[in-house]
Image 1 (tube, one colour):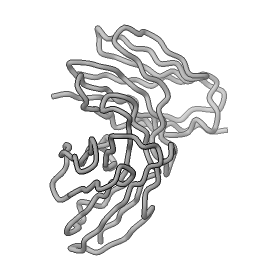
Image 2 (image 1 turned 135 degrees about the vertical axis):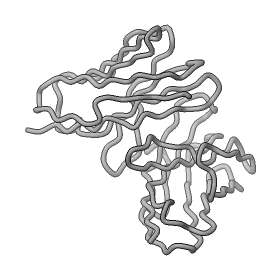
Image 3 (image 1 turned 45 degrees about the vertical axis):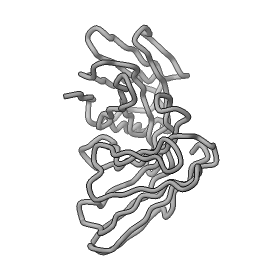
Image 4 (image 1 turned 180 degrees about the vertical axis):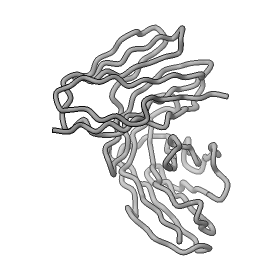
Length: 112
Length: 111
C-alpha cells in the first residue's frame, strides 16, 4: 500500500460522537486525499490537501473537516457522526495533483 | 454531468477463461483513463493508464483499450486466475485535477 497507513482500520461509534481518522504516509508526497466508498457509488472525494495547512473541499465534504499540520499526516474528523457516514474511508497520496494516486488500506467506520 | 459507467456490474467466470470489462464515460475535457484493481478489504491499485493518443496498453494478462472518439474503454483479462477475483474500477481524469470514478465491476473467478 505504497507507504500509507490508516488508523484505526475498523471503528464502531455512536451517533453524535466525534471521530478522527488518521492517514500517515512515508513517501513525502505533497498531495493527500480522503475518499469514501459506499455500495452503489464510486469512490467520492471528501477533502484533499496540496500541502501543509493547505486543504480544499471535495464532492461530499459536508459533515467532515480535515487538518494537515505535517507533510506525513492527514486527519479526517467527523465532528458529530451520523449513520449516513457509515462507510469505508480511503486515504490516497500523489506527488502532483495530476499523477497517479496511491491508496491506503482503508478504514471501515460504522455509526450506530 | 461528467459520468463514468461500467458494465457489467458483476461477472462470474471459470478459471482459465478470458473476459472483457467495459467503461463508457462522458467526462470532458478528457485527460486520461486509468483502470484500478481493488481486492476485497484493500485499497485500489493501478493497473494501466491511457492518454488520449493511446489505443492499447498491456500489463501482463491485462490489456486495456481506449477509443477516445466514442469515449469507451475496455479491460480484457486473459487466462483468468483465482487471484483476479476483485473489483475493477475505471477512473477518468478530467483535464485539471478532478477524478471521476466508476462504480466498478466485481469479477469472481471460480475453479
